[in-house]
Image (tube, rainbow, N blue to C red; front, side, top):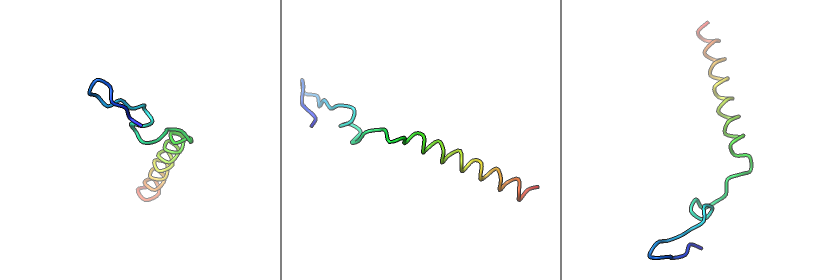
Length: 49
């Protein structure tokens, strides 16, 4: 729970972003982005070649 200190609201990092980062989110994001880039490249080569 955020606390009030010297007229300022103080919250931890997890409280401020309303969650935790983890669960390999960055890996899934990178793999998905790379997969879409490869798919677009294959489609472009297939249709433009």
